[in-house]
Image (cartoon, rainbow, N blue to C red; front, side, top):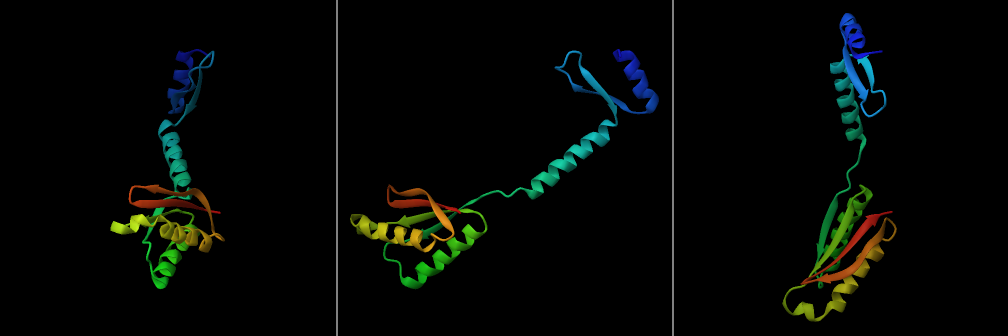
Length: 140
């Protein structure tokens, strides 16, 4: 039907004439309550946002000479982050002369990966970036 009769029908019903598909030939319009339509769209968007889970990147920092208890505590925190569905960035910080022995740092990073192998997979292998060695673990 033409625009004038459609608009008259919409006004008669107390509703709005909303163009649904402007690119179609001929353009498609619908008679509806536009305010209610926008409210329903916003409500659906809120519901979808509520159900989605955002994956965060959590960081756990280690040192080459870390003691056993500290290592286990930090690894337990990393395990909790992975169980929540977040990625974990394992960072090993070198200070001063420690940088001369990167093999000690690599042992710590590999041990972390081994301890968390049951709940994670290695997303990026350990690599050096200045005074830091980093590795990213993702949940299985």
